[in-house]
Amino acid sequence: QLQLVESGGGLVQPGGSLRLSCAASGGTVSRYAMGWFRQAPGREREGVACISSDDADTYYLDSVKGRFTVSRDNAKKELYLQMNSLKPEDTAVYYCVASGFTVQAMCATPYDDDYWGQGTQVTVSS
Picture 1 (cartoon, one colour):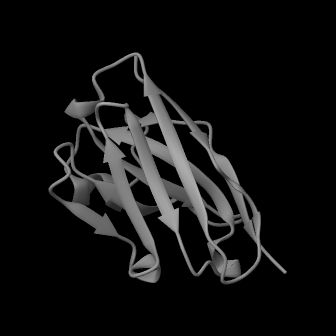
Picture 2 (cartoon, rainbow, N blue to C red):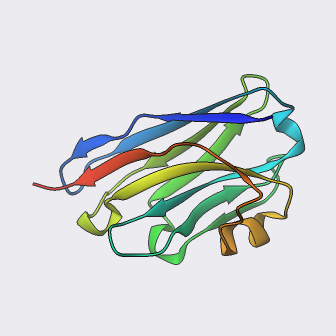
């Protein structure tokens, strides 16, 4: 069973940056598309950024395009999310996800059958 553990969340001022990391274990990471979802209080989970297994294809939520960058290192079994120019509306719990679906499909809908981490809190506030 693939296990995912996120790190790097925290409190940051508007306009600041954070880098989230996700460490995978227990499986062959290179088989899966991976990505980041987030869930703010009172809102549904939404796909933020996803990347294909071979690093060739990415998807970004419109509201984060140009500010967030997703990347992966299959040799290290790690996934990253560089978040710049953070806004208060980016405040949420961020989840690392591994999926057998395509990048577009996995980011469009949170599937229970995908592998999920426990989440890391990101708070953007002055």
